[in-house]
Image (tube, rainbow, N blue to C red; front, side, top):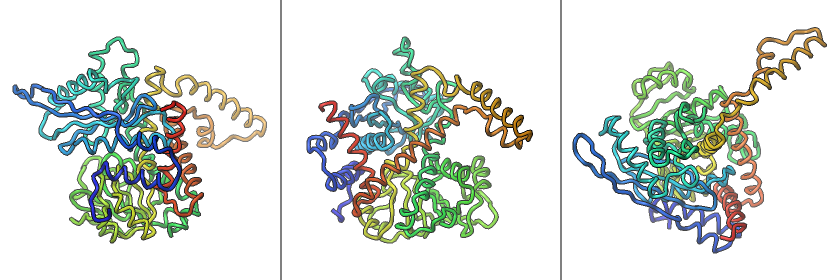
Amino acid sequence: MLNKKPSFTENVNLMVNNAVNKSRFSQNFIELLSKNHSTIKLNFPVMVKNKTQMFTGYRSVHTLHKLPSKGGIRYAPTVNPNTIEALAALMTYKCAVVEVPFGGSKGGLLIDKSKYQKSDLERITKKFSVELTKSGFLSPATNVPAPDVGTGAQEMAWFVEGYKSLHSEDINHTACVTGKPVELGGIVGRDEATGRGVAEALIEFFRHLKEVKKSKLNNILKDNSIVIQGVGKVGYHFLKSLFHLYPNCKIIAILEHNGSLISPEGIDIPLFLKKYESQKDISKIKIPKTKFQNENAIEKFPCDILVPCAKENVIDQKIAKIIKTKLIIEAANGPVTFNGDQILRKRGITVLPDIYINAGGVVVSYFEWVKNISQIRFGRLRKRFDEDRESSIVSAIEQTTKKKLPPFLRDKIIHGASELDYVRSGLEDAMRNAFIDICKIKNNNKTFSFRDATYILALKRLEKTHLNLGL
């Protein structure tokens, strides 16, 4: 198998089977998970520039053990059913790892967005959403998409309109997708969710010093060099969140499609983020003690921690043999192939797998869906009540001690939680608890990698659900 290059779907199945072989599961259950429940291909016409064009879209559902099925929709010229089915399967395992009560799904539209104006994309997206709705693949109760590569809040708003045009009576229509603009039922903190979840996972890893020691890393996060590949939505928010949560991190290189920014002493990330917001091109960003170069091959940047945030299959068996790092954080979906993973394991390089690392997006998507179904934003009922109560407690302390608390401390104590506070707290809780559960399984068997333990955790939870349902 090491000489064959598996497809993305085969990579996912190989990793699942590898975990299955290291634990006991019902063969019927494993057979059930090996195939996606359903995949639809939609060919539909749209009038663009006074000419009818045909577009092709896909939506795949991996499991129906819990509803709705959840997963993003990507817009790209490389969209194909193989990748969509693999990503749908990953969503099933991802939801199980972080205990989000959804099944796994994924979708895509075969399109090069750069060739169309905004008004064209609006018509195309609304038509796509109508076709998905008519086919039963878009609904707040059964199938809920979210942003992915090439899509964002604007596309999600158009999807809502498409669904609503067929189901205007559905009071829960805004819950048919997540990742919407906040003004249309979205949730504060969704844009940053996946990247922030990656940062929370990395920080949690360094709370487990035995695991840090096994990976031959320095005990303190700031004493390790970090290289990040890709500054899209995930990479950008990972950097922003990491420096909000842990300001002293040392990022020595940022890799993009057109080159890299490097600084052995560590890039000034707050300055980089400020400039990147306006430039969007790392080759044009000037930062003291940092230089740009055309080289961007991931294996050319030795580091302690590597964070691939770009795309799948960037670390295959060839790259895995020569890459120089101690810890890989899979922020992208499937950046390490199965064959590459086997080589990294033999070399003693720790890999934290994608189905855990980038699960922050679906965690906060779940919060948004709950918000839409309940028809009320988080914190609205309690914020002022909590502030009044805490203010009374602080006043009582000050009167009793006859001492005033420092203003910054008083404000921190009295502050009532906003929706963003609740979202960030829930995300941190999900990422920390999942890592603890993964470690429990990993430490029960010395031969288990983090990937083995994570898939076994997901499979055990899925098996229990399926057996209880009698599937």
